[in-house]
Length: 247
Image (cartoon, one colour):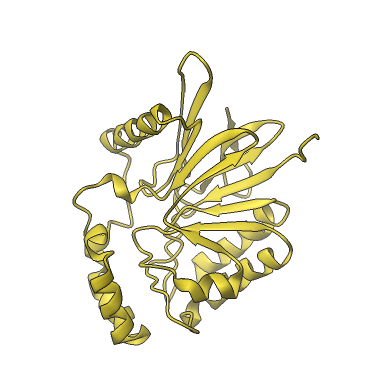
């Protein structure tokens, strides 16, 4: 039986916060322009500047974002949210409310290709976010409640990561090296984010092509990854004049 062709969008790193009306507008425009006719959407983390899931509660300034994702899911789109270093457990309620499937990392098959996808912050051994992503701190945030947790997170967020990340060959090389290890584990495609460095790297193990892509970020690089059955993976630019780099 012949498979139906797929259209898939991968994006990351919008870092939407409490006073991010311009970023919300950009996010909603991206959803309308590029995700409305997609079959699947993958958010590779750091959609929010900070998020910790609570039962029956979503930070009200995130409601337009949650609403847009809920509308997409209601229209039959399959949406995955892979938690970044700024998301400290999306919580069951976010997924139930929006219809989005939340995870830390994901292995999935796309048109016969074995694909690994994650935010990519796990590459660093000394990440403060990795230290805080533990049951002890999750329990503390649950006890403090949304308001207090948000205020503390905003005081600490400069320590969690640098929002503005310049190009670094060392960082790009580390991500490519990580992708190579995943290729050796049998993956055909590796998709990461976090570095804010849009990137495409291809190699051939003698049997098949292997492809690593980094989504970059939607705000500064205006980049995302596009997949279509007929043309494969491509790194594209989200702007008024839609430029693209095809593989």
